[in-house]
Image (cartoon, rainbow over all chains, first blue to last red; front, side):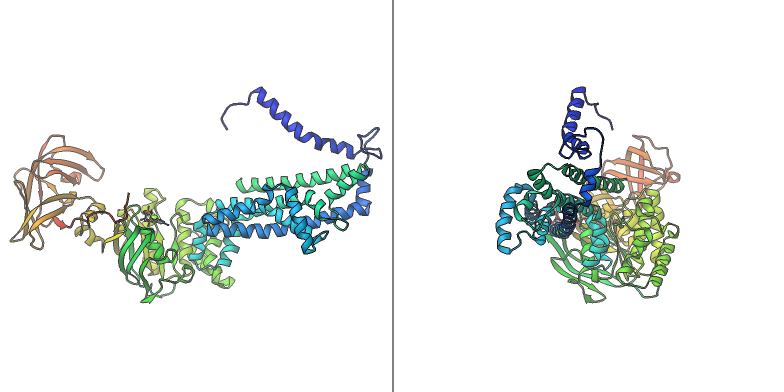
Amino acid sequence: MGGHRPGWLNGTLAWATVIYLILPITIILPVSLTDQRFLSLPYERLSAQHYVTLLTTPAWTNAILQSAWIATASTLLAVVLGTLCAIGCWRLSRRSTDLVRALMLLPIIIPTITYAVGLYRYFARLGLLDSFTGVVIAHGVTGIPYVVITVSTALAAFDPRLESAARGMGASLGQTLRWVILPRIMPGIVSGAIFAFIHSWDELVVVLFIASRRVFTLPRKIWDGINENLDPAMAAVAVLLVGMTVLLLLMDLALRRRRTG
Amino acid sequence: MSAVAGHALSLQRVSKRYGDFVAVQDASLEVASGQFLTLLGPSGSGKTTILMMIAGFVEPTEGRVLLDGRDITALPPERRDFGMVFQGYALFPHMTVAENVAFPLRVRKLGRAERDAKVRAALDLVQLDRFAERKPSQLSGGQQQRVALARALVFDPALLLLDEPLSALDKKLRAELQEELKALHRRVGRTFINVTHDQEEALSLSDEIAILNHGHLIQVGAPETLYERPATRFVADFLGKSNFIEGEAEADAGGFVLRRGAARVVASGAPRAGRTLLSLRPEKIALLPEGATEDNVVEGRIASWSYVGTGYALTVMTPDLGNIRVHLPAWRIPVSPAEGLPVRLGWARDAAVAVAEDPGSPVPGGVA
Ligand SMILES: Nc1ncnc2c1ncn2[C@@H]1O[C@H](COP(=O)(O)OP(=O)(O)OP(=O)(O)O)[C@@H](O)[C@H]1O
Ligand SMILES: [Mg+2]
């Protein structure tokens, strides 16, 4: 690539920003390895004891499993609904479908807390409060925008003549969808799924509102832990959360790389 | 391939309007079974629109489409069973060549063995058997085009629709594939409907050419007929090049004579009178050597000339008939051309044909 080299001011600023963004995450790592029994940096040596606690305490493993389940189920929900919505809008492609697409983005435009309050009232009436299903639905619906965005982007790059070609050769709508459209937009769907999963995996605000005793996701467990006692296991959980997210993002990056490369 | 003949297709007074813009106006067309028909016209003349109405992707505003006498106007494209090569091929990029070609068979739920055999036969037909496992992106333009052809032919459609299948190729490759297309048509004996704006392609491939302009079907006929007997000024100008001479006609013994100022041009054909437009092909005019004579002789001076490989293209300025374009093979030119050189032009009385002016203005609704 041509273009100017960034000046030193630019470079410094950029690095400062990066450090500012990453520092809180990097602090978590040493803290999680502390040899003390409270939140602190390691005094004498590094210790994995808190990771051991994490993986042997039923309360923590339970939370990890719950989070994983909820994230998986809500991702499935978001992917199916988001993909169908994006394809529907794309096929009709009228002015009204732009509106539908904009509506589908609402969950990430509206402040989460507003959304959570609304959900709380709504779910109370439906008896979905503090239920697994309730959280899955809430996370699934708020995950839809990510899928709609990535799938719509993939569809914008889809050559509509391929659909015509398939139909011209006698393919039904279902066959065209299965054999031509879905394989072409699969990278977009996978990207959307990854973002929807991450979204559910570290979502806290909605869970705080609609869960009480039965549903304990990982972020909620950390939250409660911070309020009750300063157990360094929380730092270990945080590392786990961040690690999972980074892993998924890298996966997305690798997929994109493979697609363009 | 089996011995089933191709479909016969007919368009009956078909029109297509978008709002008040007329893309195709009152087109009627008969395509006989096994024929190679080309829709020829400039960009925006409605060729793709007509092809898409035949394929079923565009619904006519008026008129009917008949297949072997059966009305198929309302039949959706996936139930018409036509083979189709799209402008730009529209190969599936995520499938290999073999999978692309197998697609229509997969749709028709053919058994594995039969499918493989047919795919192999189709790839053999277009000489691409060695490329079966490649992705379309790993093929050259000409190879992709042949994959598109194989895919359109593999399920043995009785009608094949081709939308500018060769337009993306360079001149030499295009000529090669034209040959292949023609040979293919002879081998499979199906009905082919081809779209192009390349007049040479139309002339060399087709049994029949339909000429379109501004959504109007101007003239349909065999290539020789269209070239030798163009019906209108547009046809004469679009298919090959032409000089136009306008004047007052009156009947004479061998046909008619056209007067323009002091000049007299004799022409054969049905006697006619009144205002007449003559089309005269540049290659039908000779440079007369000293002492030679012809039915028509006009004197002038060479205004410009260029060497075009197959011969010379001259523009001759004549006092009576204005600029006349002449195209001569090098061996038929008795002088070495130079600007300002006086020459005598001659042509036989059956060289020029009377053509009609085109139906005045473009289609109402406005065309750029
Ligand atoms: N969906 C549409 N809406 C409005 N106008 C259209 C539509 N499709 C085609 N047209 C118009 O109809 C006219 C004929 O289009 P068509 O695609 O048939 O041209 P063509 O002869 O195939 O041209 P080309 O050689 O450039 O492919 C054009 O003026 C085009 O702008
Ligand atoms: Mg076209």
